Each structure stands twice: as C-alpha cells, then as structure tokens.
Length: 456
Image (cartoon, rainbow, N blue to C red; front, side, top):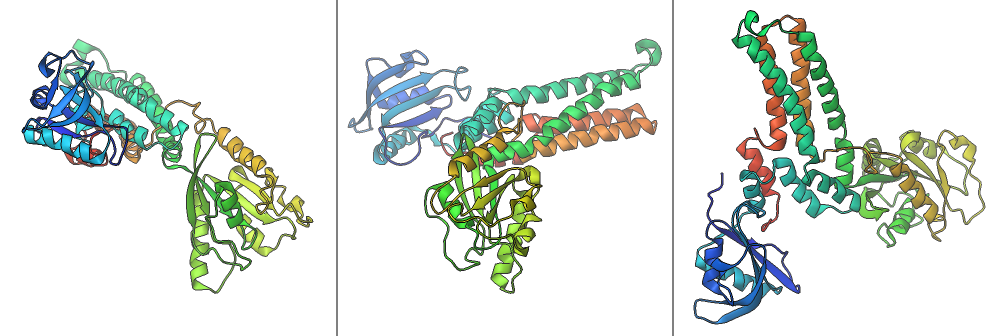
C-alpha cells in the first residue's frame, strides 16, 4: 500500500517539446510550490483550477524558468489530493532541473502509476476506470479510444455494479431465512430467487464473450495474408502498408516466418500478418514457417487468401484453403494485370472475392473496402453493440462468477442447506469485486499499476 507523502514526476514524455509538465500530489504539494515559485500571487493564496504566471528559483535564488502553474485542491483533482502542475519549457534539461527543485524541497519521486493508484485508493475512480486510463494512452485507433473512454466514463463499472446489486439482494434474502425462522420472514421462494440469478448469469456470459472483440480493438484486429508460395503475399503486404516491408523475390519460400505490421483502416486497428507460403516441404526451417502460418490461421480475425489469377489452382492452393473459413475469409485474386487462367468457380464457397495487382497497386481500394466492410458488419467491432471488456482478468473474473452461480443451481437441485447457497453467492460477489477493485488482492493491484508510465 502507498504511504501518502507528497510525490512528484514529469507528466509529459521525455524528449524535447514546447511545454513540459511537472506534477505533484499530496498534502504538501502547495507548500513545496510556495518554496520555489515567485509571482504576483503566493501559492497558498491561489484559487483552485486557475493558471498563474511566475518564475521558479532554486535555493541560491537563481531563476530557473518562466512558468505557468495551476493548483487543484482536494478533493477536486485527479488523485483526490492537493495537486500542483507546473507548465515549464519542454527541454529535457529544464524538466530535470524543475523536478530536482521539488525533490530538494522534500517531495518523493512517484512510482509508475502512483498518481492513478492514489485516485483509485481515494475513491475517485474504480479499478476498471484506472485500467481505462492506460487503454486511452495506448489506443492506436479511434475505435479503441472510444471503448477506453466508455470504460473511463464508468460504463463497465455500472454493468458490474448492476450484477453485484442483484446478487446482494438475493444474498440478503437468503441470509434473512438463515437468521430468522420461517414464521417471521415467510417461506423462501427459491425458484423465484433463481430466475433473476440465472438471467444475470446469461448477461455475464454475454459480457465475458465480448473479450475477443475488446482484445482485437485494444491489441489490433489480426488480418492474416495466406496462400501458397509465390502468389504475391509479400507484395500485397507491402502494397497495403505503402512501404517495402516484406522481401519479394521470384524464389518460392522466401518468407519463412510470420512478419507482423500495424496499420489503421477506417479507424480499425489492424495487425497485418504476412505468413510463410503453405506447402509440403522437406526444408526444416520452411516447415516451421508453415506450421506457424497454420497456427496463425486458427486465431486470425480475418484471412486474406491470395491466389494467382494467371494460373490454374493447384494442390498447394487447396492446402491453404483448408485453413480458411468462408465467414472470415476474403479471396484475393492477384496479378489482375495479366491474362487470367484461375477458375474462380472452384472458389464459389467463398463469396467475397477481390481482384488486384499488388505489383501495380490495382484494386487495392476495393480490397480495403472489402476488409472494412467485413469488419464493420461485426456490430461489436464497429462499436454499435454495448459494453465490451478489454482485460483478460475481467473475463476470468466473470467466468468465476458464472461458475459460482452454476454451482448455486446444482446446490439447489441437491437440496443443499441455505448456508451453502449463500456461500456460492458470496463467491460470485467476490469475483465481481475483483473487477472493480473492491476485493482485488494487493499484489494484483501492484501489478496493474506497475504497467503505467511514471507521471500517470
């Protein structure tokens, strides 16, 4: 747990910039500002949430920088404590000097995530909102940042508190019948109690299933370029990226490992993966590349299955096609600049087909539209379907809560004592509490906040 001394850290990333910000939080933040700041207004007399102009001086009365400062008094601050921000010039040297002024005054260097951890411990935010801060910072697309903002606004928290509230009502009813005889509280209607609990379990399962969507938006939607050797997979990778990233040669089997790059298509964060050509081979290194390509096909969100439009389909094409499901595959017919000899009727089970020339950048607009169209058809991915979860620990906690509720049903069927039923409800509540931070062990909290940058 934290000791609530006054902490300080840069709130802006290292490097040069027009403005750099040093942030303090804690009971002596304003006092430390008063030691080093000179302006028309004393720090102790500053009104909250207003910018003041002045200069910083070191212990030898040497002027260090011209600055703007703001005092945010508790509890109306990010951490819930007194917070001071100093807006100085953004050079690394001046930031280091200003930081040293406050350290010399008595402030302690903040640890990674300590500002947000204090916000959590002071009740300003719950744990899901704290985690959303990291997601906001790391979001690589508009859609990912929208999901993070919804979580920061408390959409997920409210959902979890709704589940917890319903379970607490059921537990209170059970405990009343445990503590008091039936003639005082009436007969317990167990079927009536179980119906809403079962409905809650279904809602939890639906929320847990949104993890795959949340993971894709957070980490990137995995789009795999698949096909036999020498059909233009690497050329397609380079064309979509707009740069020469994959090695392109006439020699079959050039790509022997998966190559992954990031791009944004219409707001969707994409992890574009160029896989080794799928074929039977005696080359041990190439065999490993093919094995990895097969593994990637199982986990891909979308597959771009590339075939050579100027050649008939061969056994190696069909070997690659075996790894593709029509619901998550776009057939990419490459080399449209040449005479076509590919019998596309043999690919009729794959309704979405796009002809391109990766070499001459023909048809790429249609292919991008096909990719975006396929992703947009997923209501959850397109951001039109409720709350999604992005953390594996959220999903795992929901699954534990669901398992407890399923055990509750089995206990009822086995005519178990009411105390056993109450125990299962408490287990479910404890699992949900780990999502919002009410019952999260300290070591888990420390791990979560250690992933933050210093100054956040």
